[in-house]
Length: 332
Image (cartoon, rainbow, N blue to C red; front, side, top):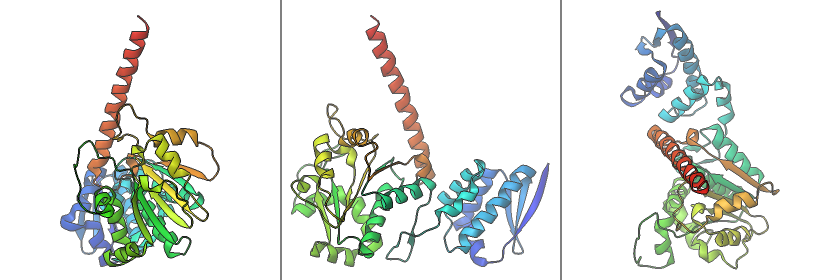
């Protein structure tokens, strides 16, 4: 039975946020809840089956609360809220409140999923944190935000960014310039995050003073890093020796975050990932936290979630075939 309900709009801002550019947000809601949404005389008219309308009304209330709290609505937030509602967990949206830092443009950086919220909490409560997950889950960006927060609150005196210089399945050949020029291509995601939070001018000033340090992982050997927030990115490309070397650099008053995606290792096939090994060896060690983010924590285009799921399904199928083949060989 097709019925309709009305949701009163009291603020023009909510109307703009709800509908989005070219009504893209409303189209997303209509598609996912199988309803029609119409704006008429300052009211949102919801048309559809009764069970879908009840959920749509709850969604309107959640989105209205988000806008009233000063946040913006985007596609990812709408999809995540709908996902929570289908699982009966929409009340948990309020748990995501809390800004880590404000970007140079004045935008708040805050967790957008419960997985991200837990990740941030683990970083706060541990000296070393392993953040594992696929592309787009915010593991690197949130680590940088936490580093900036610690720096601004005088908890650390410098930020150190490092990454193994392993190319993603292709050879870049000879790179001209000094050390910074050579490692820049590998550390670009970290630069982009710091540009967002400090602005290019302040970032370059901190870089010149050594307050922000960028170096390939090999340059960490023999050092003790005191009063620093250290981020090791793309850690799946470290060897076991490199990972042990890095983890033992931690000095007094320091905090480290190790990020990586164990499904995208660019090491030679005969080389074990130092990240994979470290997770197994350090399980249960006090002061070390671990958080695995999943496709549900992806905050890029929703297609990225579907790509990650498809690859995970493919990997499981290949693993099953390999195990079956091994058993067959042993049975001969």
